[in-house]
Length: 184
Image (cartoon, rainbow, N blue to C red):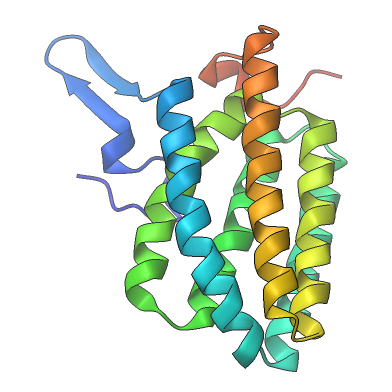
């Protein structure tokens, strides 16, 4: 059984082993993606509100450094790294907020929804996500819990909406193609 953390490639809940056929990574459908983002909105709203009240200057600096890494990855052809960093932003906040139970649950949700973003998210949408992450850090720095919660809701809705549009336009990539760097 695989451990679900950011150091492993897949979560055990995302892997199906079929005897004599191999292992298959789950590809969330539209309904499951919607359910994942619903759950994330509920949890992340609470986390961002609590984090806004307790964030230290060191934590804010760490989040800003992380956003810089996101932007650097978005500028490359490494889709998997970009995707991992965009998801890790949310997990970092969960850890910094100090609720280990919610943080562990969020790791699972982020990993599962990251499969959808890996398959459907465009570079443009990824850049918008990183900009929204920077705006979230700004709201936390201002100690604006209501604004931060609103921004988090809008951000997650925006990501979900972009994924739905990409899927409807048939821009899906197969997982193997999504994980390989783009050819020059």
